[in-house]
Length: 256
Image 1 (cartoon, one colour):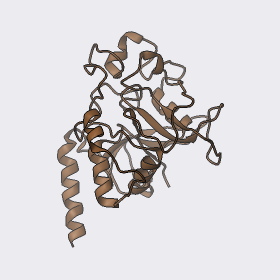
Image 2 (image 1 turned 180 degrees about the horizontal axis):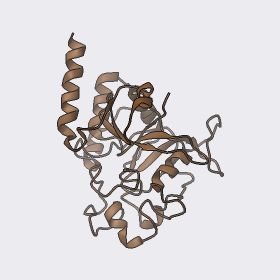
Image 3 (image 1 turned 180 degrees about the vertical axis):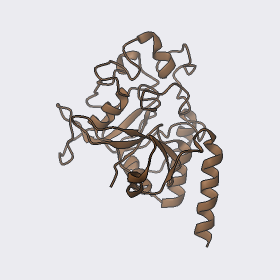
């Protein structure tokens, strides 16, 4: 009875904080996705909005969080799952970079991100999935919004300010800027995003490979537009145990 009451309260909370998405179907697990007649859903476990990403030549269709996982969502995970980090989270550091529950969760290792994803019934995206989703349907273009660099500040938070980007070397709350064609925010800039893969010289799904570095994608608020192209890859940055002030993540889920 208590658990059912808590579930009802959570659904009410979701509908209140996501008023613009209140008409979206609420999905409890991957099996229910087959019944969905919408290109957006609310994932019940963590209250995230997810967009449908169609299949491509190299990827099957999947659903992706429209924003990076927030501080508020990660706190919910810690409280619900009792996750014990190998190294305690320094909330003072996080508060300096991401001061509200609407900001992306940062200072998370790859292992922290995977633990969250498992709790939420999701997973991290593979690198080729991330890049296809970041393009937002604009195949062959440089950025998630196309090729016009003059539009960058409307879609991306990166070093400097201008346009809709008012955060100079600061992390923006999620969904502060325009989304790409698939409804995904901050696929360029704001914070780097962990991917499932080990880094390899060739891009692809390396599900069973063993490596040294994990893939991160997307650039960050600290860096220039040079790092924002959707095809940009960075070598030698991220050991899976490391935490950085500009590393976050988002999750995906497949139909079952």
